[in-house]
Length: 106
Image (cartoon, rainbow, N blue to C red; front, top):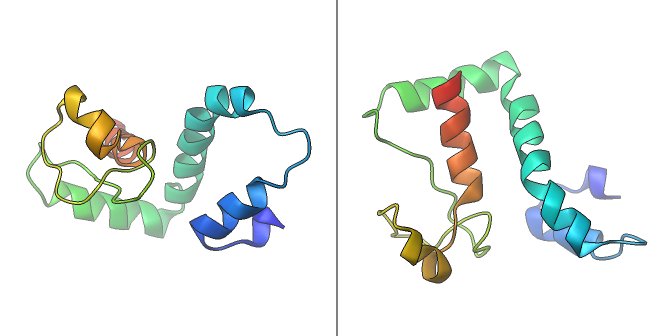
């Protein structure tokens, strides 16, 4: 079951077997689902404190980067500029952007 999976690649593999999966629906919902998941994950006091300590003790322009092979959720290692023309080559870093937004808003 997906709920018991602990590794992202395992979750993705299991997700490919979901009956009646609709890529269009997933594409429209995936950012909202990640946002909700991050809020739930970091709503636990200990995790929230760790996240804030990591972020607040750093320069204010610091941002989180998800280094991943997914060009949607992460980006390749070594990309420092927030330049939209780099997204196609290096990735959108949606997970990192959402984490940064979550900490700054909260």
